Length: 326
Image (cartoon, rainbow, N blue to C red):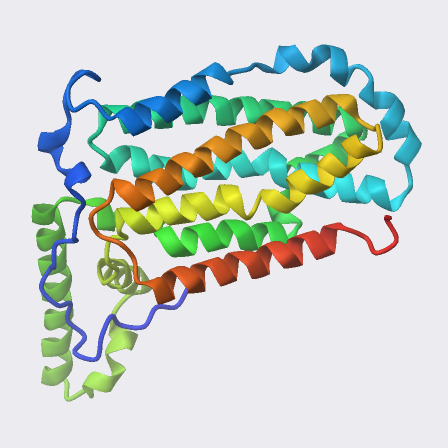
């Protein structure tokens, strides 16, 4: 079990400090109709995404041509590279939906933004289906296919991308999303538990420095999570932009290389449509980040986040792309 240090030197949690919420997170802002509080910017980008809607079956004719190209690259560095890229793509959309979109959807109070996120989840599921089919087509061995589709368990660089998302948006800590009254109640219970432990130790003439020995790890974990602050909406939007803009970009570019060689027409068409979708997702995120949010992030923090994402993506593509491929 993970070891947690006590939250602070005083061993007691500080009073609850409500997070700084965006106006768009105010429940009073949620209107039951899109015509109320109409947002032209969000509406325009939604219509562009809607006009680009597609389903997997539309790729069937081109995908039927791909098996010949798979046989051409069997046993070559190109095969290993393409499998690595598809492994990442086959799981990435799920994590974008479960880690990032879930947080955004539960916090925003804009029908226009809700509509965008609903459509986005739908098209991400189409991406997931498409990459799953591409993996099935290229990897005939069931055991190898299982490993590729569960790539997060086998690829340290893919796992780093997912861990990076979770680190910045705190997706695993559900306590930060509780309302103020519940936060205060749980914090009071925690502090009471620690205070009782301290009183018992004092009666037994045990030094306070040994407190962690008398606090169960699950209680320490609770204190650790209660001590975390709720992430700003600006931070979550930024992580979404960088995930879809940075973590996908080199893989898209490499698949476009296959298109330039006249190879994999089905994969190339899928890549063209999916990269178009992700480009719209990034454009929406940038528009929201720049023009729809009141509380911006410090520039130094933004630079740190960008650098981390670029370093992770660099390691990923260097590991995936063999030196002797081209």
